[in-house]
Length: 209
Ligand code: AMP
Image (cartoon, rainbow, N blue to C red; front, side):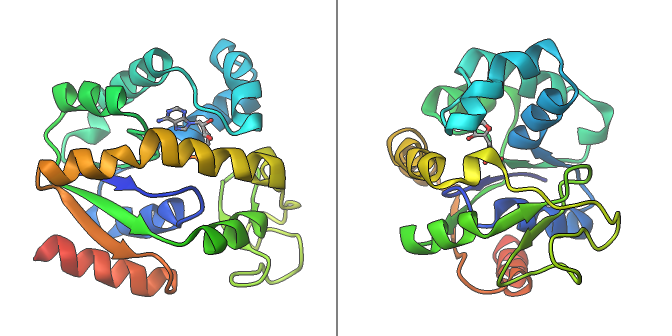
């Protein structure tokens, strides 16, 4: 089953994908995670995209599309995947349509106010990417990952300047994909405001239907 998660930054796509992949037994492919791991490892790609990610802009389509093409060619995608953060532009969606047949595009619906609240309180474990929120999903010990014991970090692009920019980019470049996939009959709208477990149940029910 090939699924795309669509929606504004901070809507909970990464959190949902981490739960849904265990239900569907398919890999979670997050382009943001792949870029961040390249930055952390100091690769050529990482050096090229570091400034773009920090500002909240989009990596050029050619670079992103090639990276996804490579990733989708891996053996672990044989029975499907969950794409999180790709496609983010119409050209990316068109490139994807030549690589894969999609079963569904899950559109996370969340207000701007809620997006800002979620992003500004988000914290991550630097090595595993595990996601916390300082209010709604805090770690057992403040600022420390529950499993690895590492100090949690805030993403550069979760700081106020970058959040505003990411929302503008989302509206201009990514939101048009809702209409694009609606026309193809692929969109499933999901209210992203409840808890991750409730969102997971709605997604599973919608996929079954
Ligand atoms: P995310 O973790 O999905 O919020 O992505 C973090 C950042 O990675 C984005 O703000 C972009 O700079 C970059 N990025 C991730 N996915 C894409 C994509 N499909 N196209 C262009 N840039 C992307």
